[in-house]
Image (tube, rainbow, N blue to C red; front, side, top):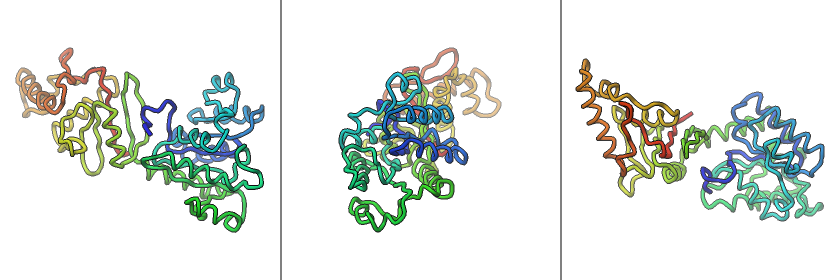
Length: 342
């Protein structure tokens, strides 16, 4: 799953319900305690098309414009509301529906699914519990970091009726969450998962566009980002690391470790400048920062040049750092990112 390059935005949390108003209730409760997490959710409503569904989606989007929504709304209305239209092909069979869900869910994310999806045409009404196998199909689409799954239910005694089916599908019946406890249990469980599984904040400038995402601390996440960016500065409790397509390092190494000090500070300043579309780092300021106290301006320029030469030597293309208008900056065509704990 190449989530940074995905044609649609993949988020850490996907909520799948057969009726959209159930999702709207969950989002409303989440917005009270953790409103910033709305940007981490995609709501997929496997609902029946009609004015009630369209009105419910439009109302929720008005209240929570950062929420991604997939729903059976007519294409003109969907485009106007900024949502993705759910089509009959998306729910034609289990494989198509699983692909729809996986298209929106980040590797290692969380799928929250109603335990009974009554609107799925490929699930017999008298065998409603078979909708749980949809989640298992979704997990099987991930070669790396399959998502976690939690089911929602407003039923009682589900352990007795299909607890064995849950276990056989690879799920723990004790993990089924009660819809009656949205505020007390469901929302806190979801929030804890996102905070623990995606504790990093990634800021990226690619093709001139800036974006921010939650990120995992896993080595697979770091290597993936390094393969998609020219420069990536990763900061965590273990230290600083510079990686990316332009960074020289041993083939077996994940990246170039940076010790705290002048070089690490300058890399961070260069990347911050690029991410925020700055005017560069003034040459004299760089020289005065890395040179001895009281350094003269002319000598500061020479010190800065030697310092930046060291930085350029770390790269496969020394032209990635340019000098323009008496300032150092990263070239505009570079894809760069910075990732650090939230």
